[in-house]
Length: 116
Length: 112
Image (cartoon, each protein chain N blue to C red):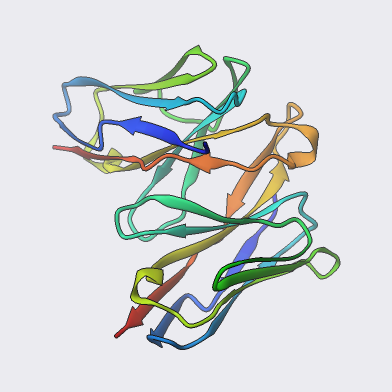
């Protein structure tokens, strides 16, 4: 099974709200990722977790706060977002992050976020 | 980091036609993946192909790592093939980590 699940599918939030995005995989992968994708653009990497520890933060604003409670779960906590943060947020996982980049990444269906 | 260029940016096909999408990368890559993003946003893995040729039904892909390019062939296209096709290669991003760099995609529209 190569499934990554994400909830919710759609989210509308105000600029003062606090919400969370959730991602789950049961492939035994030890690396998990958050990407942001704006319309008509490719996905852009936000965060990478490896063995439940934050490995990479691509200079993402602090209003986005990732969390990896265990090896199967990845959350993205949202607070005080701006309208320009409206986008498709994709979660991905891979077996690991190193070894010359030889690990295939698998993506979830995404959460379409609208900030009003 | 590496640069990934895809061509053409847009492609319109009559149902049943064949097509070739190209991906060029600026430096050697350790890994190359092709994805299809459907109209609902789901990124579907098509091929994991650091080198060589693979086939899956009507789709096939060839990566020539020494010449830094990859090709995706779609034969007998169907309307369900519509969407955006991305290629992505790994780049070293520090801390022993290799991360995917995406091209800008090819938007394919298959018309009946």
